Length: 412
Image 1 (cartoon, rainbow, N blue to C red):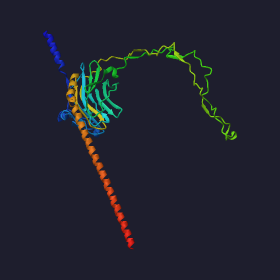
Image 2 (tube, rainbow, N blue to C red):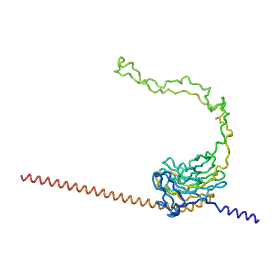
Image 3 (cartoon, helix red, strand yellow):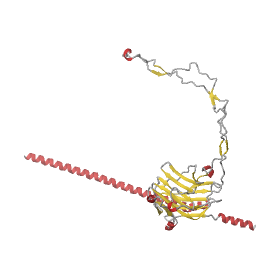
Image 4 (cartoon, rainbow, N blue to C red):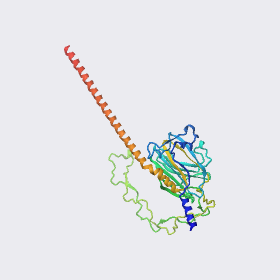
């Protein structure tokens, strides 16, 4: 009994003690000591600013790093305390993205890097392990990237996962399990799930078409055939057009000058079109031929598709046409429940207040625009009135001059 209770206690501690490999909330100015900005693009390298943005739920809690310059490359990364492996464990990657600028084209994704990543020279071709997060460019691209690196190749998901495209903060979560299943959550709600083998091209297909198999020459795939007993009626063939019986040769028609007169053509009411025999079921129909498959001799099972043995850094490497995206609340853990709990505490806690502040700002801006429009209209009306008064005064002056001229003429 004591042994059983001891096992329960140990098991309970294990369940309640998730491992947090990395967590960053940018809660203080000291974040710059932990992050390294890339200089790979020189003058085209954009700078990150520490801010909660123009609207937020909690100014301190919602501070993150924001892209600050339009049409720039951005690269920044932070090392884990020590490289980790997710062998035999669940891997959870989570962070928040806020496209405050109402982004038109640019990335909002995060990458996991091996421990030997060159942080100062981080760029688009720097080798990474996993890339995850939203990507938006015009109305056609609004998706969540989930890219895994496997044997030197970057594999894109075969599924289309739509991202959020408004101006508010959203929580993105990727869960990779040791049974080679995955789940993508947005705002703590499942957006997609499945298996790594089915939804990425990690491996060649298990089955291939048998190269030795060929459709038999006598295989009939025609479900219907012409009825051999159906014959075309003898009176079926009629011309499509006939001379108009009501047409008369014009009185002024000269056969020598105009040629031989012919009446115009009209649609033949007795025309039945092209005759086709009736269709009947084909007694020789065998159905659609299906190419038989065989086991692919090149297929090799890999139960470790999920596994990475050297996760050493997290970072953002992206391009933005219109800057203003804020990244925050980064978490890497081995526990799905922990990630959900952190999401509720750091994102869900402030999201409603963030929207309230934005709505208030929008209303104030609307009122300001209305006041400015009203003032502008009043100014225009005033200018029109003053212009009209000046014209009246000019007309009065002209009339006075005319009266004076007439008076002078009378005296003469």
